[in-house]
Every structure is written in structure tokens, then in C-alpha cells.
Amino acid sequence: MKKAIFLLTITGCSLFCAPVFSQTANADSLGLPGDNLNLYGVLNLFQKSPTLEDFEKTLNDQNTKLNNLDLNGDDKADYIKVTDNVQGTSHAIVLQVAVNDKETQDVAVIEVDKDKDGNVQVQIVGDEALYGKDYIVEPADDAVVKGTPNPGYKSTTTTTQNGTNITNNYYNNGGSGHAEVVYEPSYWPVVRYMYTPTYVVYASPWYWGFYPSYWTPWHPWFYHEYYNHWYHHSYYGYYHRSYTYRDPGIHSYYYGRRSVSVTVNQRRETGAYRATYSHPEMAHRAAINQSRTTQQHRDKPVNSNAPRNSGTKSSQAPRTNTAPRTNTAPRTNTAPRTNTAPRQAPQQRSAPRQQAPRSGGGGGSHAAPHGGGGHKGR
Image (cartoon, rainbow, N blue to C red; front, side):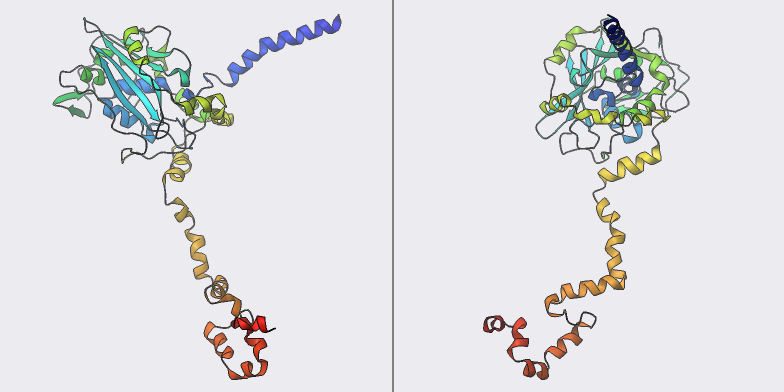
């Protein structure tokens, strides 16, 4: 009886403690590939972008430290292409990765809808293969400022697209790149541009093996380092998780065109993406170290000349050091015939072999190594 009570007590403690431990050890971790693309940060970048083309470029900029995906496991960050799908007054802006030359995988979709009164709803939905089912992030209603952005603030740059000027006209915290105030989506520069009469539906021209010249991949960071970098950003209060689709129609329209990669599903099922969680000790870092990022993550994978540069000293050493020269000489000058005098110059070694005394005294036995018939005669 005592043994049974003891076992029940142990079982109860394990059931109670296990969830607590898992949540503490990996807070905010989905355990899915989407952990390496922060959708809060993506939506914040979207609301600051003047156009979809600019949004795509900044999203794939290493200095933004936002894209940390490596879906095909080649140890290089993936390029995320952006394509807009329009249905009436709704937009389904798809973020997609080319996994290889035959497969693509949707990463997320930004769904934008404008009603007859001019009100705009924006949500970003993570693909279920990367984030699980119904992973939705949207601006928090209680944090969104109603009304027009500050007319006294003007952006340092004005983007012109198809004859339309788009000015980034909202507050930020002194140019640090993180919005302190998020206005309602109808005032976001990219949204305003998408609903202008001159807007041309954007579709990224890039695909597997063909990417813009300004982009070079880099080594992705480990999850705990990446997560802790974004955890310290202040805009989390302006976006939150939602469990309701604002525009079910545009979501259904997109979902029927969703692209899924067999390779990604196989890698997820076999646990290939778990390696990103292998360095939890990096969780104490306040942010991704830029100098270490440049040295360890960018130079190694993207510099095709790296092996040549890194080996410059070793390749020059044999040329400047006298010791290797004695080794290379026999290899370039009939090495098997000069074993008897390796320290003499090649010309001095060949001269004695041509002298009559040696050939006359030794007969065929000394000439055998240089003639095909010597061995046969012996």
C-alpha cells in the first residue's frame, strides 16, 4: 500500500512539474521552424515600409536581424520573396522561400482588407507548417492610436512609386528603427500606397538561384540568441496574438493557393530543425553582437574566395621557406632518379650520370634504372 501511494505521489509530481519546466526552459518557443522568423517584427517592419518592394529588401537585409530561416538546411539564411495576391479590396501578401529548384514553402501571409467605410484591418498569419495552426498576429486595438499621424513629423525620405509620393509620416523613437506609436493601419505608408489608383500589383521577380545583387546569405543564429535579441524590443505591446480571422474570405482565397514543401515537412518530422535550440547558454545575451555576426555568420558562407584567402599564408610559406624548396625539387625533376644526391643542384646531379667512368665501370647493372632492358637482363 505504501509503495502504491509513493508511486502515485511521484506520478502526480511529474505531471505537475513537467509543463512548468518546459514552459520555463523555452519560453515563447513553438518548437517549429517559425521560431526563427519573428512575426511581430515582420508586421512592425511592414507598417514602416513605403512599398512592398522596400519591405522585401529590408526583410532580407542581414543588418535588420529579422530573417533567421534556414528551411533547406544548407546553413545559409533563406531569401524571402514577397508576392501580393489581390481579391477585390483585399490583399493576401505572401512571404515565400524557395527551398530548392523545384519546391517553395510559404512562410506567412499578410492579409489586408479595406471595408466600404475606409477602415483597414491587417493581420499576419504564420504558415501552419512553420508556426502551427492559426498563428495570427495583429495590431493591438488598445495600443493603436486613432486619428491622423503627427502632421509636424516628416520623414527624411519620400518614396515615389508610379508617380505617387509615399511619405513615412508617423512617430518613431529618434530613428532607432522601432516604432513607439502604431497608428491604425489605414495610415501605414505601404497600405496607403497599395490602395492608390496607380498601384501595380507587386510580385517578386526572384527565384531559386537568381537573387538580387545586393543580397548575400549568412549563417543563421541559434534560436536562443535570436529570440533574446528580439525579446528586448519594445513594440511587443503594440501587437498581440489573435484567434479570429478579420477577413475569412481573403484567407480562404489564399489558403487554396498555399505552397507547401515536401522537404520542409520531412525535415520537421525527422527533427532536423532542433539543432537551432542546441545553445541555450546564448539566452543571456542582450542582443546579437554585430561584430561577431559579421565575422562568424556572414564571411564564412558568402565569400567564395574565403578558402583561398584563409590559405594564403600556407600557400606562400613553401615559396619563401628554404626547407620546402628541397622537397619540391625532387618532385618536379625526375625524383626517382635523384635519390642518391638530394642536396645537390639538378644540373650537378645529372652531370656525373653522363660521365664515362660510371657507365664503363658498372656496365648494364648501373644503367638498368634508366633503361627498360636492364631489369630484364638481370
